[in-house]
Length: 109
Ligand code: FES
Image 1 (cartoon, rainbow, N blue to C red):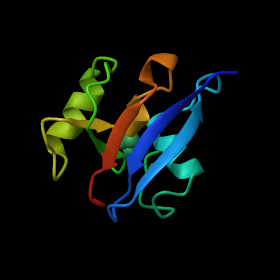
Image 2: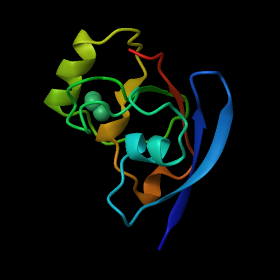
Image 3: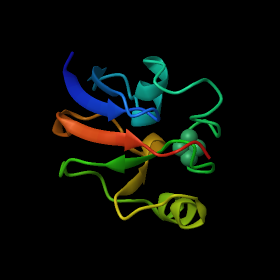
Image 4: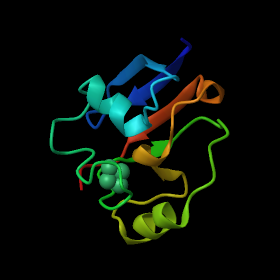
């Protein structure tokens, strides 16, 4: 089992360094939920289908991420508070290459 370290800044500006397993098919939104870094019901509303943007986060590190799918791009084009470094956490699977990833949760939508 390989765990990676991810730095997550919550919506109150508090930083958390968490470890995330890469062998459990978890995505970033699920990692945030498992550490309860955002209140229940404010993240992962659509269950990870790229249909709500409640899992939007800003990528602060220059970690290489998987390409955006059309669904992710479409959802972000309609979401609020979108920046150039916005991604949907539910579309980012935990893989060893993401060790050291740094993100900040976007405001609640
Ligand atoms: Fe809904 Fe990610 S959980 S878009």
